Image 1 (cartoon, rainbow, N blue to C red):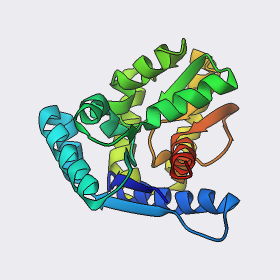
Image 2 (cartoon, rainbow, N blue to C red):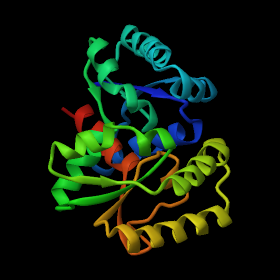
Image 3 (cartoon, rainbow, N blue to C red):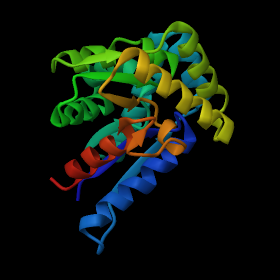
Length: 229
């Protein structure tokens, strides 16, 4: 059986969700066994500081995790978060093992479903970073993001509440209101939940009339498929 190595802790709540979902998806087709998973849980506060101020140091921080997982004997590596994919290409270039991208998994599904224009929500680093538009653009797909004031609000709620496991009803309702408004303003075909904490309180196939792409779910299914190869 293959072993997946997960760089986790960025943040903790979504890492727990990954673990649960990988087991659940695995056992959908094989209830007689469990998958092999190794998690190296990092410090989310350090991750936020480095992604904000020092990308070279972020690469070193995440590369150290890759090295630990490689020495532990995993077969491939993934990150249980969207934001650190801002340096995914640099990490993949250093790694001696294959790495699985959450962005590629999402883009593959968007293309399969025939979507052309997708609204992206996540941290500021994810919404403003080039990695989603570049990956989707190679497939002829367009990614749209909220205006700056809305990005600032989403980021503030993400960092201040979601990363620490605070999933309040008021915040959820405000997210749904925002999605409905952006649906009417930007006319996307679908919504990307581009933060692995977002599905923890917005888990639905359709939100405010928009089909959703749950990046955690898509990544998990890609991970399990590779584990079975």
